[in-house]
Each structure stands twice: as structure tokens, then as C-alpha cells.
Amino acid sequence: MPERRRYLVLIPAPPPPREAREVLELILAAAGLDLPVEVVFENSAAELLAGPGGAAWRQLAEQGLAHLFVVVTTGFDPIPGLPAGVVCLFEAQWPRRFAHHTWIRA
Image (cartoon, rainbow, N blue to C red; front, side, top):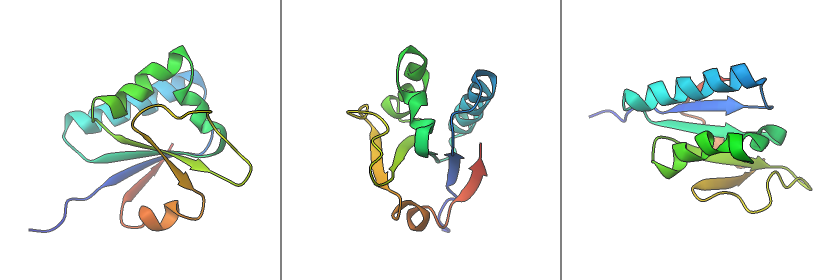
């Protein structure tokens, strides 16, 4: 049996609130269809995980609906103490890790 296709949603920067909601809905729809989704927050996009508005994003990981990753560049700490279920990746690691995924750039 061939390996299931995996999907990567790449968020390079924090989108405006309406677009952020739409991206979140896309991820929830994929999870509802039982599609394996991983979300990568680059640069300051990790701000989406912080504060009260971040609860919906954090629930993706907490409920096992998607795997969340934050890319850390040299000298950049996106969130002090990442939430549970969010994995930190160094910049050089992530392209190779997701090379065989279908990429969706938000």
C-alpha cells in the first residue's frame, strides 16, 4: 500500500485576522477529512500561537488534528516556552523534513 500523502501548510508571516481564520478553517476541514496536516509557522507567524487568539491554533495540536512546528532562526525566539504539542525546528532542518509533502502556502 502506498504511503499516504501528507500536507504542509506554510505560514511565513502572520496574516490579517480574516485570512488567519480562513487558514484555520482550511486546516480544520482537512482534519475533518482525516488528511494528515502539518503546519509550519515561520518568522513572526508564531505570534498566532500566543495570547487568547492563539487558543484555536493550539487546539489543533492538543486535539491531534494537526502537527504544529515553529521555525527558529539564529537569534530569534518566536515564543518563550512553546505551547505543548508545538515542535521547534531550526531553519536548516525544516525543508528537508517536509520535502515529500504537498505544500500549501498561506
